[in-house]
Length: 410
DNA sequence: TGTCCACAGGAAATACGGGGGT
DNA sequence: ACCCCCGTATTTCCTGTGGACA
Image 1 (tube, helix red, strand yellow):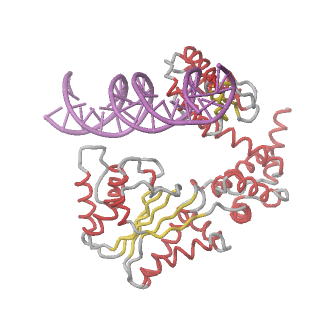
Image 2 (cartoon, helix red, strand yellow):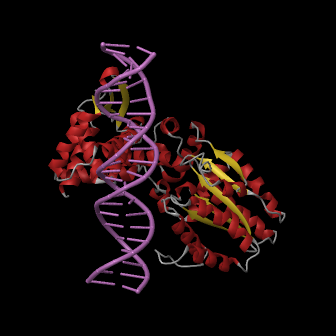
Image 3 (cartoon, helix red, strand yellow):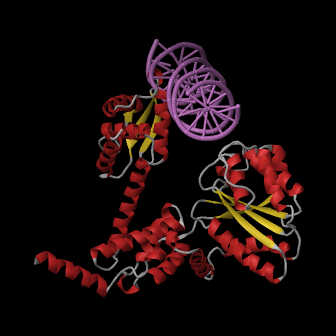
């Protein structure tokens, strides 16, 4: 049979020269903590993040002599290695401390998902085994008390790594006040705080009384450049892929794309993984063209992901924009889109929101790179916001189809 | 130079919805 | 079951603004 033969052929082909040898190393989620650290270790051994590493290590050096270092604030965009570097170094430092007989432990409070002050402190309490999760019904004071109680008997060092602090979206003042003022005074523990944030100015609008107590030294993680990314990618390639079937220049190309767009190592690895999977399904070697394919596919994925996770109203606004702006770079006034939006709402059985809200949604779409907008003054005839699509060609129809599907199910 | 259009976007008011306490 | 409280989403209200026009 024809089909039979083709299946066999395909299997033999991919068995003969598989592109992916180990899927796990293309996806950090599938790696154990140890493996993740080992990957990092390999990269750091090639002088990546050298400056940051030596700064952090010397920052903690006093601790190994029994003195208290000041707090530390790590700044830098996502995927620049703040979390990874810090966790790896803390593990090492703990090792050294143990050898020197110095008591030291560290905890990682990950605030990747925004939460209010109470939740954050509650989560911290959970981390320290001081309390269980509460949704409500217990005062902040009580929660703070439990944390203090659980640390009352510990007089060694405690490094608290507060990841993405700026995600404490309510009463961040109270949160910091607790960590910086109340907690250190209440317990014998020698507390060292490490904050990470991707907003350079996260400390700008916190209460000045708290700020004056928050003495930190700062360390900025620059986005990775193309050379760094090549090293990072090559480490993955050697662990995960069959290097014989990778065309010359693939790693360089991926590194170039990634450093141009964001300098985010995680996204660079994602692009590598996607390219490899494309090669695998094609049953051939990994070519430069496939990198482009993967790049486009990832772009499409992120658009679709955005749509999937957006509230229906925002989807309706996007739908209206896609409908009334058929081709790129053709600007039309926002008021026209609003009319289209009212129409599509009727179609989807939603009730249209006010223009005020609508304009916020448009701004959001602009922020996420779906549309471009500019304010044009028509002098005597008022001011208009002009809007145009900036999504790549061909994305629009896919998006419209998914929105229709999402909203039809009401 | 002053006027005034037509919208942007800030601030405050209000509606909504979910979860806990009684 | 009912009410209350809180956080979030949306509306309402309002002030500000660039520049053609007179």
